[in-house]
Image (tube, rainbow, N blue to C red; front, side, top):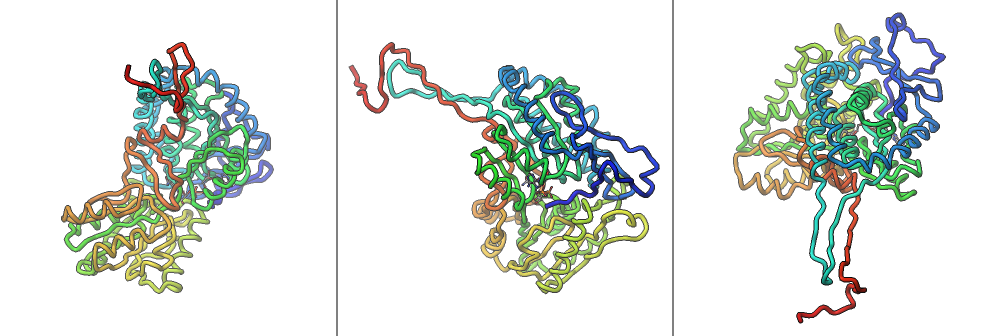
Length: 520
Ligand code: NAD
């Protein structure tokens, strides 16, 4: 579970350079009002590239704050659900325009709170824009269906109805994209929401919610509470009026969330961890494969659920591929994501540094793999005040090693040799997660074989394990998910429930499965 980068009671004094500057406070948004927490406490959001830089202060929300947010969402629910979906969508199209208008600012603020490089935070905001336009379009579709009834003079149809009040709980690695993937479909479908962003990146969700207000989303329809998972998050998950929990985060937290939802029969949609594989066959374009592995393993400092944290390489090209990958990894510039020359930004917080370096040690000592490059925290020069880790490659790893099995969530990838496609597929599938996988080959037959045999929610051919687009379903199998898919039209199945409707215009009692209907 992620620990926030920084916690601060209202009574505490901050030290260092930040203490001399005025740090902006960003309140909760409840029932159309911007309000402080009933706790009176605020936590600090600091820049992982330079922890002296305090991005803002956010409310440490309590059960009472969640209660107020739920109450506001309940009050707004009937009016919002009765507003025709095309009208709800019009408001969201306006939101899309505002996100485009403020894209550059949002990207810069995201880099400052989260660390990833500007071109990636621009992509994160763009994903929210794409999601908004695409899903708002569903306001004029939200298709149901009609079907023949088995009795005469009877009409049968199926329509979608909103599930009701939705609790949205999000992680820090896609600070605007992931909240948008949940918020926009929830709203188009006619639900009201309470959203709690991750402790490390509340500003990007604040920006999204603020834009909702400006776009004209009515008071109470979207409510924002910031704070810690174990308190504010748990209060949402356990609230009896919250009909649906949509959660993205670690598999460990997801299990806790799922258990709490099961207790009170709430709908629960989970998007969790990954241990994604790139398979490189002997006929692959090696330059392309290395390019994909570098982008997949070290983009977002490896902190993507779809990160390429394993590369399974055919023995015939293993040595060459590994050399090329290591050379490229060594050449990456690690630094502040706001600097355009930076390839790899910091990791999110001190806990992440500890966890990632712990895995570097496990890889060397416990597992006995070969550390081919990286493995260190960078502390000199421009790295002194941030959480920077060298791009790290483990080679000669076995598939059952901990570094080959567990989600490290940092700039670390593990290269595993293989002698056949079949073995590569077994290794690829041989983890508890099932989010994304990819294959590099020029052989269409083997590409299709892998496409068929990999048990993941996403699969790529001659491309890295990352790069999802909003109009295709997104999610994973096994330990990654619980059977739902976000994005695409499939997300509508999370945020609506089906209602089957029968209209009998025969004027008499007709008993399905009992009365005979003959040709006369
Ligand atoms: P996390 O599980 O620590 O936290 C996620 C969210 O859950 C945060 O908002 C947190 O405050 C909240 N939370 C924590 N404890 C809670 C509790 N008891 N009750 C309710 N809410 C609680 O995850 P993280 O560190 O923020 O994110 C990283 C993880 O997310 C990785 O495992 C990554 O693979 C996964 N992830 C998955 C996807 C996907 O779509 N499959 C996408 C992005 C990230």
